[in-house]
Structure formats: structure tokens, C-alpha cells
Length: 342
Image (cartoon, rainbow, N blue to C red; front, top):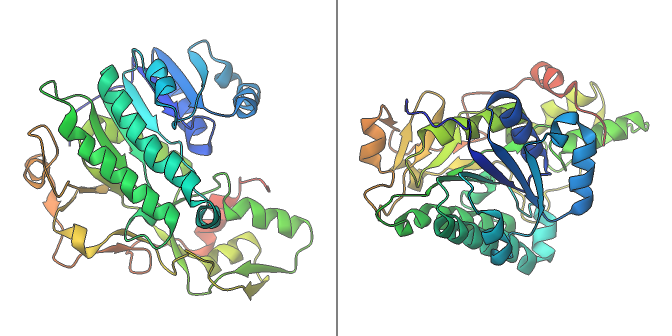
């Protein structure tokens, strides 16, 4: 995987650009990759204003703030005019909220994905990467189910690009982002500052995949360079025990077991055994090839092997509880040191 696709002099659009990932990606793009223009596409004018005030880099002359919703294809068609690269980070993602508001999650996460794919094809965008989640692998909650459908839509979109072979559309799937908006770490830190004597955990056995925002943004940029179209890229990231995270935030504090919430898993899965048959391993990640290769330009097991990948063993799974990489309490303490209370 040695091909290059620099963001330099490209017009880059980020849906959900005011979120934790969007802001980190845009900052990295502007400071390290010299794009021609960066479009922040999101539906909340207040968050766009707050983003612009929060850091001088977000008032850069190359940034354009574009109000719109991924549910609105007409607005996407306007926004995608002359765009080269799209990062699709817009999503509704709170698991409990999805269980109570399923139709809203379907409209944003599924219909929105359909609109992104259609607009990218019709406007001749070069490359699109959609962000996914570990909850999309064998989903048990509605949020995960909508993201699984979204993943399938982006993979299948490669079959409709025509003879030109563009856009290339791929997916990046990873676990919890350390300190992102809605993360438990800022909440627990605030509770400790306010004098809490115990922190609630849903189950003491729980494990999760963990990735830093820096790693997540760099992984997306790396995959713009090496994507063939149709892959689901999964980074090799560590797991952590929820009990170790508690001790990292407040050593010695008591834990109160509150019980697993509706739609919550004890352990997370990123690659299941059924996907192992078409999963290829690289030094820093796994690439899940499409089960149905509908175009000669799409990624396939054979094409991924030809560029240096290797097959994973039969029965392979990438699970948070059987992962080979683990973060200790001390490592988690260092990683969370700079995260501010909510």
C-alpha cells in the first residue's frame, strides 16, 4: 500500500465538520497538507460560529462554512460542486437516543449516506471516506444497525461510478475516540471535581477499543492515499478495561455497577469471523474487502494481496476482549491527562 494521494491543492469537504473528529481533521489538513479549500458542512449555525471563534486556524481564509443537512440531497449537490475529497463524519450516534428515536437515526445515518453517495457520483468527487464504528459489526442496537447499512451503501456505491472509476468510496471503522464529544472521560472528570466518591460502571467485565483523535485523523488521511474503493479499513488499536479507565481518572475511587444499558455490548467487535474470509492484514491495519465485487476498479481480496497484504487465519476475530494490545491504568492516565472536564 504505497500509493500517494496528497490533499495538497484539493478542495476538501467534511460533513459533520464541527464535531470532535471534524475539527481535528480540518486543523491537521490546514496545518500539514495545504489544501486549496476546506468546506465545513454541518447543520448547526451556532456550532459553526463557536468553531470559528475557538481557534485562529478555524478563521483561515481557506475555510468555508456551509450550512446544510445530509438529509437534504439538493443542498449536498450545491456543496459538492468542484469538491475533490469528502470525509463523511456526520451522524447521530448516541445509543440510547437511537432506541427512542429510530426514525431520526435512519434519516440521518442511512438516508444521509445514500445522499452522500449519490451527490459524490453526480458531482464527480474523486474520493470519499465515511466514518463508521465498531458497533456496526454484528450490531445489537439501532445505531450500530444504521451504521452497518451506511457501510454497505458506501461499499456498493463503487459499482455505480461508471467507466471513469471515480469516485472511490471506502469506509474507516474504529472504536471509542478518547475525549470526543459525549465521551465518558470528561463526564467522570467533572464528577470527581465536584466531589463524587464513586463512579458508575455498567459492568466490571466491560472492555472497549480505544483510539486517540490524532490517530483517527491520521488514519483517515493515510487511507485516502491507499484506498482502492470498497474497503472497510480497521486500525490495529488497543483495548482497555472500563475498570482500568476508572482508576486512571480517580485512583482508588469506588465503583458502582449500574447494569448494562439497552443496546450495549459487554465487549465490542470490529471484525467478525464471517468477515475474516475476505479480510486482509497490513502492518498497521486490516482491510475488509467487499463480499460482492461488482466493478473491476473495486478492492478485492486478490488486489489487496497483490499490494502487500496477507490473509488473516481461519476463525479470526478482532474483539476488544481478545485483543493482543492493551492499555494499562498508567497508560490511560497519561492519555487522559489533558482532557478537560465536561
